[in-house]
Image 1 (cartoon, one colour):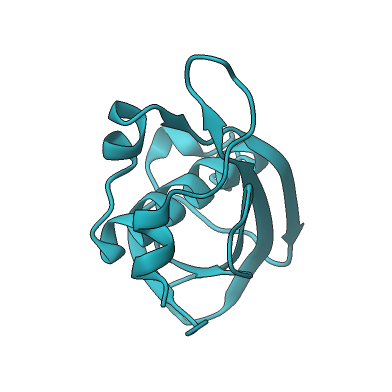
Image 2 (cartoon, rainbow, N blue to C red):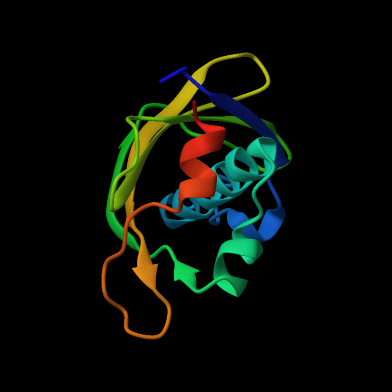
Length: 133
């Protein structure tokens, strides 16, 4: 499988920070979501398309390692990569850097492919697997 990266930029909004002007730790999960949504879009697959076709992707695991604070109005770059070829789960690795290219945090998420009606696990859609070759 070829290594596929996606880069997403976002500017930190005031509402994402605490009283010290530092990004609140819980917001990093949202940044990861932005990254994986754009990763899918870069392949030509919209998450909305999978939902319309009866597939949902709940997060079943989230791991974050905080290395440095990020501050209000900084521009962050979210590097998202596929960890391994998906089967019934899909795993992503993340690196978030600031505008000085300093590593802010790293992380990983694992999501399960579920049938939207039955909520039972299903295999990764063939259309997505074909795009990963």
